[in-house]
Image: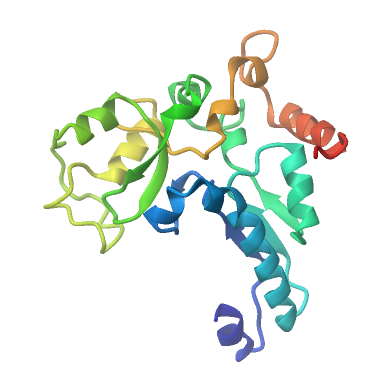
Length: 223
């Protein structure tokens, strides 16, 4: 629909990012889809292949796969689906250059697989986040005192919400996880001190991470 509308103005998208259900943050999928492991596992490949094929009707538009892309091997798989590139977020959070507070980064390093959960966001969408004490208090019925400072989405009803998600995310990014929480992709638990810290106990650099991704990409494809 976007391509058809824009082509009337003799223009098409510079690229199309296809984000699957393994992504962190707000997700454009129904809750029943996210609760179906088989759907979650295969959705990105299916959607990428469909978008790649359909986009050919409008020219050579790069399609970028996102959501759950974590390793070099994941990148290789995405390219085999016809994607021109990938978008990676989760794995770049625990790097030196990421401007999130170290406490936010350590939320990733301390997370177990079962800590990565789907929440019902106040803005009316499901979202993927790392479970913590703040979320537990909210789901136990506690209501956070707040005023709407952002007016970000019409679907959010401050008078019916237990907390302001924008405020909670900003506080978490600044390191106050007692009053906020971290969004994260499904593979955030793979970020560990062993893989994300250097020999001095510091977060690795993006340069180091890019080298790791390149090395992983070069490995034989796993069956």
